[in-house]
Length: 213
Image 1 (cartoon, rainbow, N blue to C red):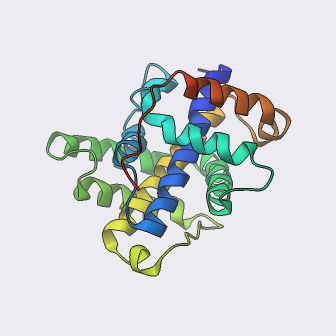
Image 2 (cartoon, rainbow, N blue to C red):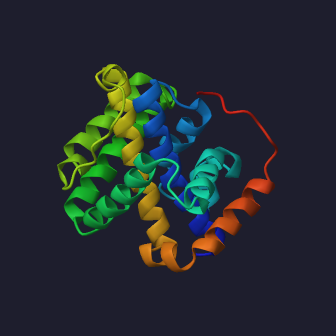
């Protein structure tokens, strides 16, 4: 799983988690199908392909769109999303050097998998469990990701849990991107190629309207 397309899909996974985090922080709501795909990716340990990690290419549409928009713009369209993406990549580097924490996360997600027999993917119980995993592991690494948004949305416990679960999914995508051969240097030297590949993948998808917001 180290083709250029695999790298783009995994990179889009990082952008999608960052974008959904920003949506919740500012609007209190995010695209439901995209969020389902990001959370779904956390439970795909032995997926047969990068595409399968997100349940299909269609489910990473928002990530591809945001990747295309942010990397093509002369000036960042959303500096917060770009900041989250870079922070998630940085945290993944730190996590990769911490085998004990990696095992802690894997064990916790393995335990959470059993709860999917009783609750849907985006049930508050599942999201809260994943948020606890993030809080007890990645959130202890520095520098911590500081999420900006509307105080009323950020102080809502359900929204806070969704954001933490999405950041966990973002780190998972960053790890997948790294495993596929992605690197920060590639982002710089292959920027035009990455944009072109993202556009090409988007062209293969049927048009649809975002659920929210």
